[in-house]
Each structure stands twice: as structure tokens, then as C-alpha cells.
Length: 175
Image (cartoon, rainbow, N blue to C red; front, side, top):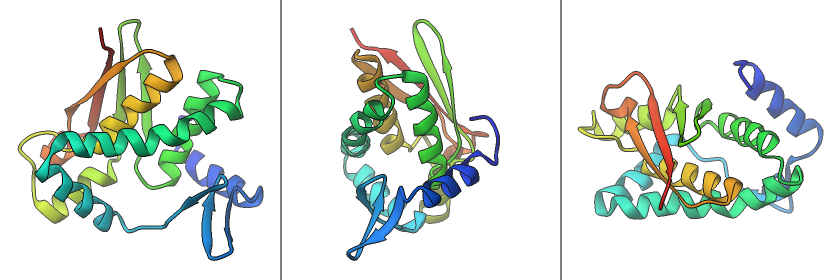
């Protein structure tokens, strides 16, 4: 979705269709348990994990996002475009930023702008010397690997946390 109002409309639709609800002391997001969490708490946890091991932050993103992608694919009978639209809406609505995908035959370029995760990283840890959105890179990698049934490698090439204007990732088929 290209409109900045899309996440707001999507959130309203999710509320009206009861795809976001509170039931039996649980927040359910599209029938999966969820939590509301301040970005500072989330980034502090990921940042500490990343300082210990960047690969573990990447793996955390891959595992957490990978677990829900099959649900999304099934909603649209594996229609990749509809699934990508849903993912974009969910990411924006959850506060992780606006995703823009550019598919090339050999690679996929993904932009996240704004990037609340990178902005929170600066507030907590200061300006980074290198890209820091390993959790998002791992999540994006899981999306493409699952949707396109090929093994991908995804890395962040520009990061707002280090002073770039936006976070940008490249995802390429692994051989």
C-alpha cells in the first residue's frame, strides 16, 4: 500500500472485523497471542542481544516472523502480492515502519522509512557505526524464503541509526 493512511485504515478494519481483540486476558492479533510493547523496551532487548551476537538478533527476527508467514500465505492461497500487502500493513500498524518492496529479477530491495526501531536505537544507544537492524533483516529474510520458496540472504545496506536517511535492505537468493 502506498498511502500513509493505509496503516490507519488497516488498523480500523482489523478492529472492526475483530482481528485485533482482547479475550481471556490475552491480546490476540489475527488469532495469535500478541503484546503491546514500547519500542524502547523492544530495542533495548534486541540491542543487548545484538551486542552479544548479531547473528542471534538476526535469527530472532527470522524465527519470530517466519512462524507467522505461513498463516499469512494461507489467508490468500499463496498469492504473493496479497501476502506482501498484508505484511506491509501489519508491519506499519505494529509500529515498525513503512515497508516498500522493489523486486528485481536477481534481488529484492526493501526500504523501511520511517524506521522507529533505528530511531529508538539512537535514543538508547547513540548513533551507530554500522547498520543495526539485524532483527528486521532476519524477519525480511524469513518472509522471502517462505513466500518465494528459495533460500535468501538479507542484509541491511543503509541504516537510519548510523545517519542514513532510511533503512534499506537487499535480499538475494543464496546459492
